Length: 148
Image (cartoon, rainbow, N blue to C red; front, side, top):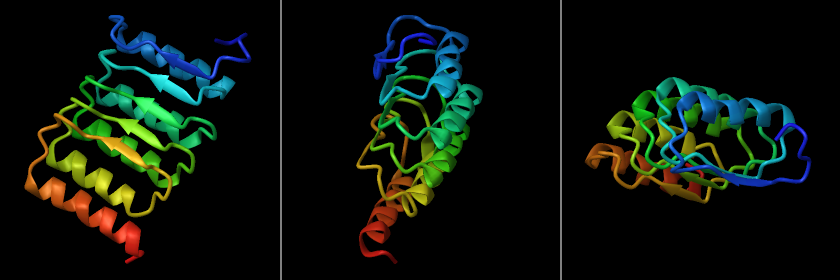
């Protein structure tokens, strides 16, 4: 990646990568800043790794799509990603499918959605989100649409 100046999309999901290997990609890409789409599904990423990815997202000016399907970022990782979304103006597609973010993670994301005006697709399938988390997300979307 370091020497490739043209690659803009990379999906390494479902390749049994370790969290450290996935974060190695993130670390190179932070310097390179060319990827518009990155897939890291099933890369054993936990909350700490999600926090490092969140730092990358908050500083990226080109990443439009991020797939973190089937990792284990939990509420702590979702909260870090949510904080990154507050200042990110380019990410339009985010998949957190199957990450066990629960109510607290959903509420954190809902708070970010109130101020993020560019994210158009958010996949939260299979995250153990209950009524309270779903209501927070619905309210955030309503507020974003009506600027309340």
